Length: 329
Image 1 (cartoon, one colour):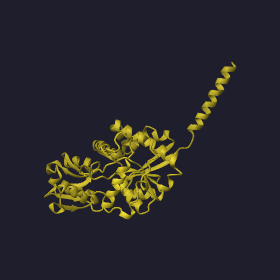
Image 2 (cartoon, rainbow, N blue to C red):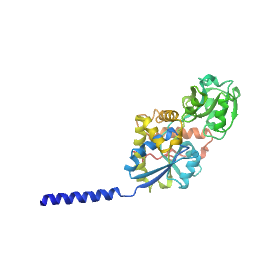
Image 3 (cartoon, rainbow, N blue to C red):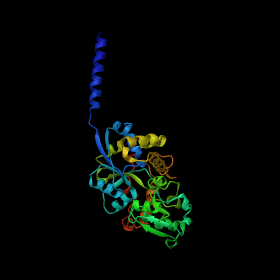
Image 4 (cartoon, rainbow, N blue to C red):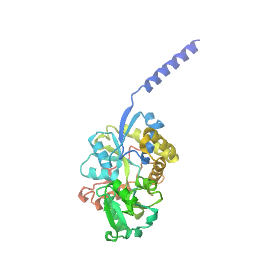
């Protein structure tokens, strides 16, 4: 009887401690995306649905963004905890004094490309000659355009251009006022087939040898010390989330649509996620877990940013000025 009483007492005490642990408040993290929700973002929603962030004691709140520049600014100002944004944009801001760093790079190659309906017969860079290309001055793609042309041996005098915002570009191609547009394989590349009712061809900038990383997790530099353990827990959950999305992209998209039913075009969003997954690793990071970019890739990206005049040579700095990988699992 005494043994039974003692065991019951131990059991009740364990329940008390378990209840106390469950009641512990979670650390809230606001993650601002680079843009409106689309397929590339699905891993974060999958991880949240599966409880990976909650298991790490994190209450994750995901906010839509309005461009990488705005997201980087929000992180630098402390308006949000973390951002998912273009690392090149972050580098430009950091070189000018913004207190931001990346703690993991998911898209380790640029998604920028020349995108065209199949019936325009633009299958190689030489096919651009004599064509009309739609572009948006001031966006993230256009500054790389001259470098791409130099790499593939095409001169600007050999084609025409029309300028406009993202919708104007798409309309120009749809109404045959342009043969192709400059955009992203994970955005325009997946939307265009449904708009022009045919497959598309994509000439990727990365295939021409342009080394530039794309989207990653951005943190405020001044918080890396005080919130280091929290960021480690976040990156552990985020890494699991991405790995699961690689195994089951359809489930990741389903989780995204549960949170954002208005995202639209499920098939296109699934294709967006699959295309983004082709950018997760380079030859130097193959075999590593997601987010672990090679320092060499960041160094080459800095060189590209300087050559594009996004960063002044005197302000280039070193890899450690922009990257901290110690928060990865």
